[in-house]
Length: 201
Image (cartoon, rainbow, N blue to C red; front, side, top):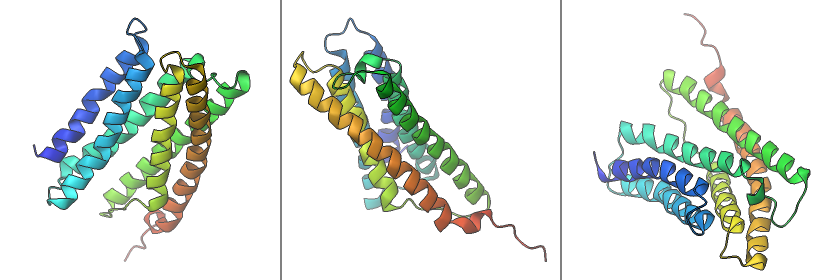
């Protein structure tokens, strides 16, 4: 197993650690520590790809593990946040915050499932579909949203700082959801030939 794949595997192994720290309230500043773990894990997504491309270490295992690790990390973080309403209702309170967050997360997860299925169809036809810039930007906003919401859920008891982080996280979540829909539609339209039936000779 080469270095990029080891880094990707490390990201996968950090996911249960992240989840455990998030839920164990006996750990002082558990949300903030979970935030740091998430940031480290998210950074490995850039690092493994950069090393693989720079040194020609791209492998089929890496192509399989990398997108899975990224999606599982982000999906896990969003779902865990939804289980703790107090982590979302810092700057604003009310049922609307949970509805807003729930809809955004549902849209993000639905897009990832649809695009993953689309890529499977493309792969079965021998096509490799590259990610576009909008997709990379939406991933960045997803990461910003999660990190900010985690920091806002517990930042050393500094209420003002927590409210600022929470506001950034809520706003970034909405932007991420919009970019997710945009990138998903754009991705499928740009590669719509994948869905065309081949004419029999």
